[in-house]
Amino acid sequence: MTRIDRRALFTSGAAAALLAAAGGSVNAAPKAGGVLRLAVPRDGGMLEQAARGAVYDTLTEIAPDGLLRGELATAWHSTADARSWTFDLREGVAFHDGAPLTAEDAAASLTSQGIAGADVQAVTALGSRQLLVELAQPNPHLPYLLAGADQMIAPGGELPVPLAEAVGTGCYKVERGQEGRHFRASKVADHYKSGTAGWADTVEIIVIPDAAVRAEALRDGYVDVAALPEPRGLLKRGEFLYYPSSSDMALAARHTVGIPRKVGQRAPLDDGRIAERWWLA
Image 1 (cartoon, rainbow, N blue to C red):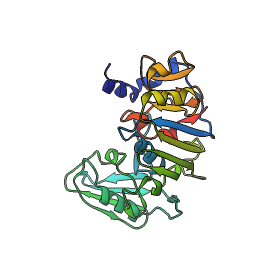
Image 2: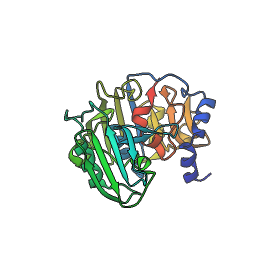
Image 3: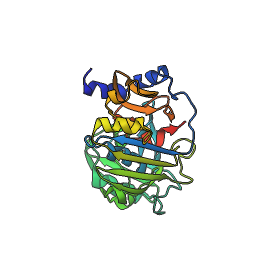
Image 4: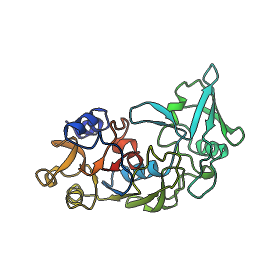
């Protein structure tokens, strides 16, 4: 199996079955608390991917089971020709700096980033809680497109910003961060996802360029999850969980890590949502 195939298998639903076979905590109920620590390579943007998934929300999201659901949007509908879409925003959501989420923030964010895969004419706030997206061409897939990791909603649409200055509505608030090096964030109290996501009290991500050193960090207890570790540094060196298998691992984790019954299908690190979806068992 090639390296590309390995990543594809990890991000498929087959990974969950392999986890169960390996005796992992995929079937255990999520547990709150603790510090979830990840080691990732420098290449591939895994640090930024996981950090953005912790800090920012999107209007919609793809759940671990592959189904579309609302995130900052609670409902949406379109005209018959799928060119005009109206989204109702969740009430009572605030950014990490305390400012309330408004439709103006969502409109500015989507306007500044664009919507990949859609021919957008205009994005307009209809009051404070409703958003209108007008397309030049019909697109019945717009709600799925808005679940993309590049459709983040930020205050006033100010994106991108340095990692240390990122402010979103996600489960975790930045404590410190630097692109290509490290990231630390703490759980937001009374978040609208409380009880369904954001299990760890703190999430730490560190870039370790060398695969052998990532394996060593996991083996010696400095991190809980290592992406693309050197297998020889782990096999027969302790009890770990390997994904998708011990002979061809994309991730390795300690047995104290809890994982959803299903994992994401579009990108490594559980579609960038690993920080809010995984837990310490």
